[in-house]
Length: 335
View 1: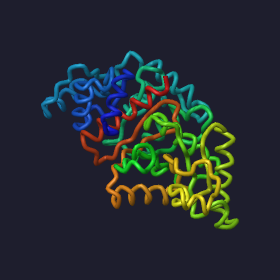
View 2: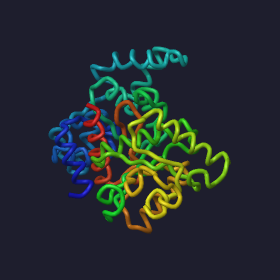
View 3: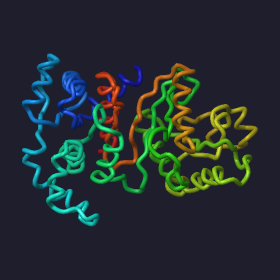
View 4: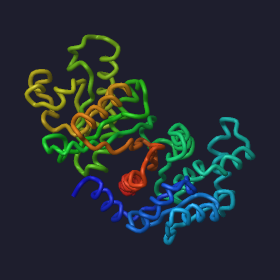
């Protein structure tokens, strides 16, 4: 069974719900119907005015059976959501009137549904910018206990079982944090390890990477940042099998590990790679995707208290379905 089928199977078994705020976006409506028909989610919720959602469905010949449509402005939850949003943001100067206006926004309303337990997960981004989704997530859902950093990972399917877990690896962070501090790197490593466990179904083995291995790059800031990040990750998750700072070949090739990091506990086992910054992470995953013909699934957001995911604005219907399945699996793992 390939990764996508495995995610769909797991999502079905967890029986979680998902809210899609972009309820009048045609690809989203088509994806919602697929998710409902395949029973990937126990409940699929589209946000928007019912007549507008139905008009889009009719134009694409989509059956909305089994899909719930909620208009944020007319919802029975609106007043409670307004109050909760005000309580969250009043210290920042938000007024009750501003909170009420904010909750008319489908993205914020969807995030509040997740916060308040009205939905288990949320996926957006076919129309909205990543920054808007992150802002809604950070201000309403917040980060998970023990972390201050929201980040991302890609699931890389190399189709070569010599790498990672059955050819699958986690690459992080490749989409969110441009220049992480040591503290942020440690948060990213711990979050990526959880993503590995949730999505790949195996125990994480983490390498925090650099152009330097065990101090070979000297005492320059970039190396020291990763070294301190390794130390902090060990403090935050002492049970985690993690090593660094390591070059990519020292992370992946046992004979090189023996030369550059003799005795490393992660020798020959690595399934999760942590990049030192967004330049390296974004370039790295795209090189592997194109040169090794790997499949890249993501970016999958991580580090939030409850699961939300972003989409590329160029996504296909199938892309949305897969992202929803992954996010539903993340929701299942949180119960």
